[in-house]
Length: 288
Image 1 (tube, helix red, strand yellow):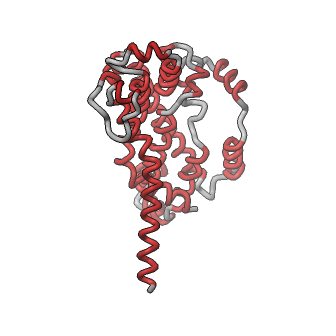
Image 2: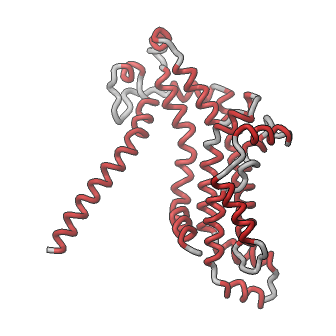
Image 3: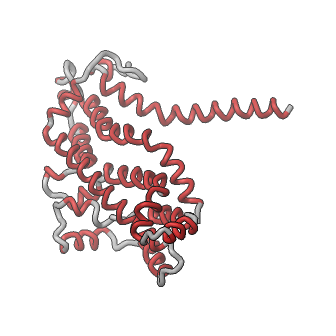
């Protein structure tokens, strides 16, 4: 009887989870289908899950746009620099805060957590960036938020959960603090570090509002800001303009292709770090 109940529960559970998954998957599949479908099929509403026809004109138009390519490369540069800087600062900040012998660590930690709930506001932040001479510079996009407090807490909890005996054994072997940190602590922390990489990479790749506030030159627009500008421009097209593109591409093609170009890079990276991501979040959140 219990087996039968378990079997029924499993069927219902998997069915519901499948339906929920499809609700998240369908918009993505539909966007792919629209980006590759012919204009007539889109305008007539015949596109559902699979592309109708074969049309790569939207992607050709995007990659012929020098400003779009520049925004893509600039965002990639921001993501690489931002992740490296944020990761380094988060790790070297969390490690000493995890040590019981550090004097005043509770005060420092409370001050850091305070910034998680309160900030100076948009205008003071803008004035600060301006006074520091960071307006229209890439540093304005990652230096103000170099350390994410939530990720710092995850890293801190993980460090607290590491066995003290491992570090003590390394000291007996003659290793100094830096050697222990580099050769013992960092290798043991790779699952959590992978988690931080994903969170920071997604944050920098999706950078929009800071770019809107601080970037003045068009050659320093991030991909998300460029996407916003393109989508707004396409929304302003009139019906006659849409019909004039009916033999090639229409705004719907370009919108879908632009969204995919901005999304796919993160989707490609995530599967390679997925197992570390799940393990890192779980361990980092529970330990300590």
